[in-house]
Length: 484
Image (tube, rainbow, N blue to C red; front, side, top):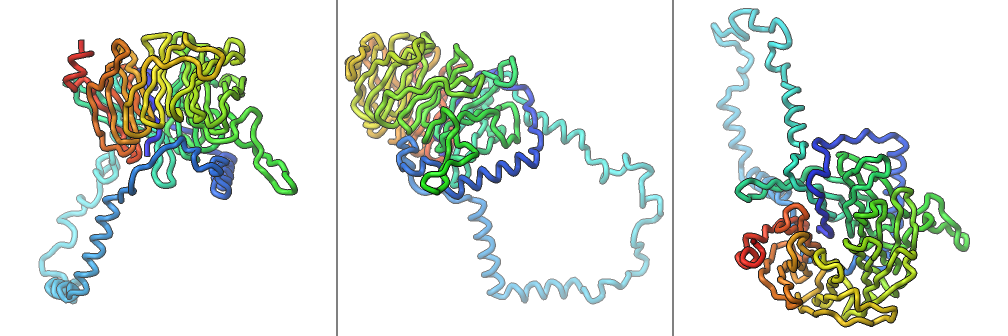
């Protein structure tokens, strides 16, 4: 499945990514030890079946077509042999007269007319030795090159027991056609649940190309997307300590200082205060990380159940929203360390949050019961349950797992649901209306996200493990309303 999607801003990636250095023996041993720990005991998230973010997985797993073909061919071969194909082979061998194979025919020269044809004056003239290595290298570099016009999409991907980040490139032609392919993959040890792109470089002053990943494990991994074939994250925030503490004579897992204690369900990078990352967890807490030192700076404990989503305000970068399974949304002002907290009650478990990029006071909340509610932050008070919604929209028949505002088109919202549908909404005058919808054949939809560089391109992913990019401008209603 694809559980999360993050767009990489155009031009943020290196023109030609760097190949990772081969791992040292110490790194190999450490990786083996980590895999063994996960295999033996799993993460603490295993203790709670709901720690996967309430994601509903659709249907059966598709079989690999190539494997099916190979099995079919093997069965056909066995059947042919059973029906007498052996006799046919014997007849063919007899026609070849293999008994007299070594007898030379009169006048036949075994090799050629002269010894001059048996070798070349130099290896450069021998077509069998000159294999054009330079041409192969040029082709490989061309395949890995990221053009300035390319768009990059990072997907949190899982298939059976394989977890990874898929780094996809999207090419736009002049006539609007889209060509998408996987550029490279990043291996993950645990099931990925959420992602957040960021440009803060811990190991240098220049901006970089990184993605933070939250998984079923309490650690947060930050990977450098400009390095291919990398096996170790750039930075790890929190997680299990290498040392184990004893509880009643038994060894128990010990956590790094400031770490989450369960699955990381949501991540949000602060684009203004670039070294700051917020995380939401099934352990009921929200944490604010200072990535520059790799440590947790603040832990917020204002929710009574799993925290599913976090979002920084774009206009007020010190303001953080969090949504929980306790059916509430909280707003914290981090100027005072998050001590001041305002809350709103909602109808059901929170699935996702999004600030309106065109209205500094407005934010949207999507819920497990298929509803989407809009709120004005000015209605907040310290009393839980204060502030009526601006509007409530029955958007889908099942959980609305993801919402996304178009970054440069006001009042244009996309919603994705476990009912397998993606819908586009016009929110003008706080009177939402559905102007287009699509079943993208992705199964239950877990993530939708508009591109910052091409505001009509909407990426979607779901339980079938496929990524789809929808050019919403091709929809007549979208073109009529927002095309100008």
